[in-house]
Picture 1 (cartoon, chains in turn brown, red):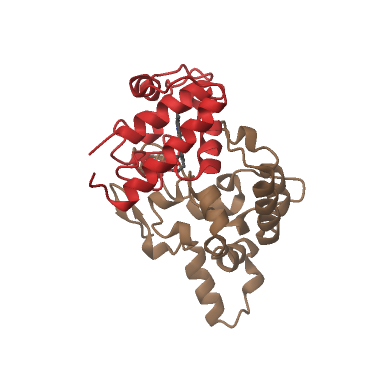
Picture 2 (cartoon, rainbow over the protein chains, first blue to last red):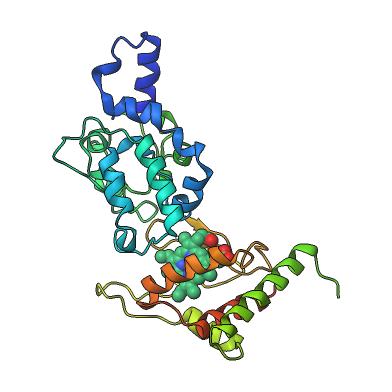
Amino acid sequence: MRAAATLLAVLALAGGALAHDDDADEDLGRRAPAAASSPQYRKECGSCHVAYPPGLLPARSWTRLMGGLGDHFGESAELPDATRAALTTWLEAQAGGRRVPAAETPLRITETRFFRREHDEIPARLVRDNPEVKTFARCNACHADASDGRFDEHTVRIPGHGRWDD
Amino acid sequence: MNLAPLAVAALLAAPGLIDAYRAAGAGAPDAARGRAFWTQSFAAPDGGVARACTSCHGPDPLGPGRHVKTGEVLAAMAPAVEPTRFTDPAEVEKWFKRNCKWTVGRECTPQEKADVVLFLTEVKR
């Protein structure tokens, strides 16, 4: 598994020469801390789940997602209009996902090619069949600092398994 | 009376809420009815596991909950433990609206809200 943050650190040391090698990794590294920068985002979205790094989806994904909060993956996540408008604007400004094909508007980060490639070596038994994890959507089950936008591979601890090294 | 200042704040806030529910048509609130509503299971429209307020908030209002879908830890619902509970009416209504729709399949009535708020506010350590 590649770790975006580690890769980014290496790229930074290399003077950014390879920085365009993987825009999605760049999105995560550059944009992820943004989640921490908006108390409103952390409060309104982070009460139910990790405040996902907005840079992992393109702006059009956030626009669509925020337009459908009445049925948010099967739950009502309705917000007062003013709050919804403010958060939509913020998310669109923080968006990334430039490698997502233009014809696609993913609503789940876990369905993006970037996410799948990062996690393609993790067997289902450690996630789906692991009662402490259950779903890849729970970043913070294994990435303790996910809410702060940090996904460094060295900090990964899979419950019931331990560190993840490849 | 010998209450901690924060507990006093919570006790003052909840009656304000209950007054608002009464103004919206609720009768006298009843904590036992609130407890029954809080723990009642409702069939899930998708045929999945039945839903209750306690699915996410946990069986004990004095202890933490765990979001049934995301696993996120939720602070205790009783103001006796979590003094910020029921102090911000806009927050309270936002969550009642969402959670009642998901759990019960409709918004809660002012009576149900008054009962639940009274039940949770009265739970003591």
